[in-house]
Length: 276
Image (cartoon, rainbow, N blue to C red; front, side, top):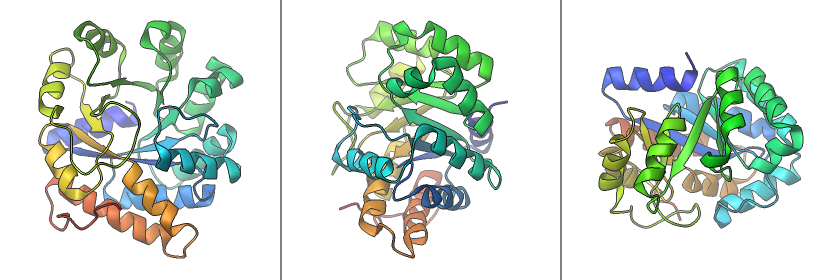
């Protein structure tokens, strides 16, 4: 069984919600990415999303755009990102999703990229700018490789398209709770309960909710309706502010642990990690 599917099956059996953390690969460097991944596993993260640096990340807000720039400057090419995944796999079985733009798959060759990712230990791909209507060959190659194809649903997605996405998705469905790009927000969207219910009418897959979740209080609120909570920009912002500080991994992992406690119903998450 794919690691993503196994993790959500485990969470469901325990009656728990999941925590998905996004970081930009290579920010501030690939060794830090490896160390952060291992620390997140210990901190209670259920799925790690690694953003593969790209020169034109149109779905991302400023925080994640700058992380992508730092990753490119650090030499985080797709092959080196996959080498880092393989290095993580020597010490951890945390499920890993690559958050990636289609140009990078096209440049390598669709089949080659997917096969390389599977060999490295990647569990799923979230291709930001690939429409599901144009993804027949991608879906076939992903199934053959045993990888989960993660798809996005937005607040503006029509009902018939939600149904089409649900038929293609595996692992989980990612509900983007706000229109626009990634980024921290002062309050969570008020559409989450209604939209997660609409998505669940079409699929038994877990529904993960992200975009704009910035602190443990917000994560706890979203976890009431979602099967998993996705936090990205608030974590990336901490990495940006700490840079190459000796305690980078410790500080960021501490914040992530507070998110995990909030999502999973533990203590110590309340309000402590509000992002600036």
